Length: 463
Image 1 (cartoon, rainbow, N blue to C red):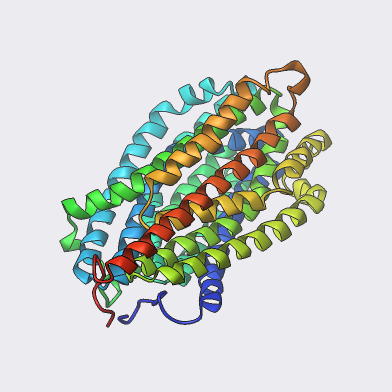
Image 2: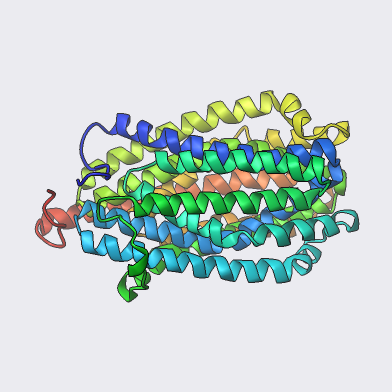
């Protein structure tokens, strides 16, 4: 490996996986802390209606953003495969294709988010006392989409090269700015939800500038040179081949959450407020587990490029064990401390806190199942299979949850928050079991092919 790269194909796996994962976890947790600052600031100084307004936007934002951010997964996997096989020219072209692609994605998201905010919220049956503030928040938030996609693509490239610390540093700087601007815009300028949305957009711009600067300062094949930016057809097709199904999967995954959010909205603003606060708390558990999924993807990607099938199986076992422990410990802790944590967000409604606790009980306690599912998805993408996990997730999560809402949830005896939330754990279990069986079947076939044709499709010899 050249200077600036981290070789994930050699050395002790457990130590490397943990060292790789910790900065990714911290990056995700920091990002959520800064997002939580939005809710905390509006909750303490603007009230529970403003919390509901911000929370109502979450599933919609994820729906639109995931469709395009999935392409950053494609960029990261393509870079990881190239690094593992020592195809420096391919890596160079992938990076210089990914950056302009991210700008285009961000521009499209901005247009959609700004122009369609209120119609989408109306389709979700957002209450009248919330929808005005929600629309303002969404429009301003989506003005920062180009910097957001640039950061996500850049961070995926750095992680594929084994650098998980730089995104952490840059997010820390941007997050501190975000919190500072939150306080300034809400407390001093009295901007309510518009203030926290503007703070987020400005801080995302800072993180994008820092990530681009890091890529431009590299000395290896991952170095970004602005004058060489160009969309290369073969690299773009590879990014889309892996990333588009990942984006579709994320978007369809979010559609089920949008429908669930619409069902939550039907219970009124107080329930929406408790639900939004609980979602933010459980986000800390999810991002910690999802960091293990990113680790699995990048380790599997480089080792797949290097043709090391047996090492991939060890990566699978270590990452599944790690995410099980992480999800169990953090999920139970979030529930047990739920009263105190929810009170940080909500100060004017004990009833909203009560509803938040209901969500934490049904989501956080079995949350390790979601982590297992995400790791299985990362493993499949790491070996170049992106359509397969998309199909499985669409069936196991999206179709199942939508069917649940329009059948079981509509029955009078099951029309409750508890019945709505239990669909999460069932869908995670079904999806994980299917994905892990498929992954092991594919891995077995890959090993048999390598044994039968030891020199077929082998990557370049490692330097």
